[in-house]
Length: 191
Image (tube, rainbow, N blue to C red; front, side):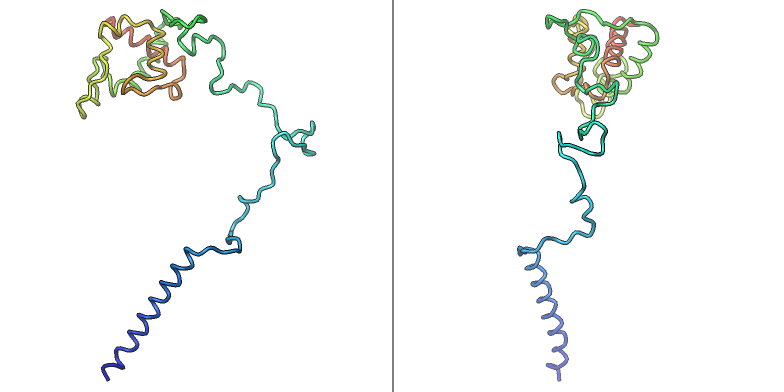
């Protein structure tokens, strides 16, 4: 009687083990038939290859010219020195190419507070939030070495980074980087 009461549980346990073993085998086994795609639209899209002919466009080409006014990401627009901080001979620019006025300084202060203040602090002494929370001091912008640094070299540091500081080439446009440098010079002068 006791053996019969255990039999249904044993059968259920046996069936569960067989189901698990069969499922595991199916997952790791290879198949000669292709997988089932519930929505194959993205796998097989109508498209043109580069430089192929097209009856759709008036000029018969699949590749379209860029929209007028399009600028490539790394393309130098006007003055290479404005974008690189270097003159034509490869020397760093001594001074900021922007005409410094109140609007440029205000923009520089705004961008400084967003990107630089967390590490360099509000006064540029290198004791920002990074120092307060992690004990890591950033560069003190009032050091003699940094005060004597040409604007083009400082632009290169902001653009490409130095030491623990990452570069800000992509998040900050060149004009804003120059505005930050103008604001840093104002901080260094104590204004």
